[in-house]
Amino acid sequence: MPVREQVSFVGGALAVPALTAMLLDAVPADRAGTAGAVLNTARQVDGAIAVAVFGALLAGADSFLAGMHWSMLLAAVGLLTTAGATLTLPGAGRADAPAAA
Image (tube, rainbow, N blue to C red; front, top):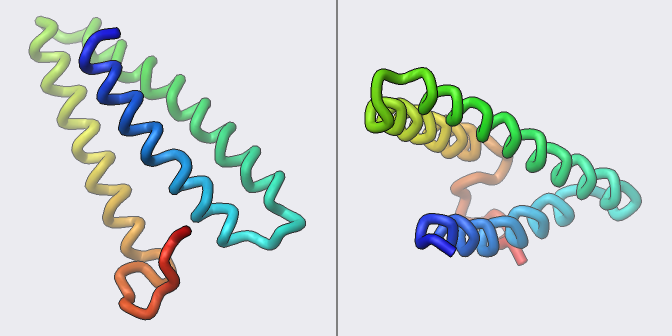
């Protein structure tokens, strides 16, 4: 397995359980199945869209390097947007907010 895939695999392996635990902690117990299903469906759909978008950026650019630069710029903007949106969630950044399990 190439190093890039190993890093992605490790990152996902660390992030997904924490994300799932936070989600299931935030919904009533009788809706946990629906919440988990929506989370996993969104992850799969978003992953497929990301592959298509980044593939199109790489294929449509003048060179591989130019496509990679656009892809990384788009990924960075998405990461910053997500981080900013996370800070608007109820309890985000508060010292008295309950810690995730």
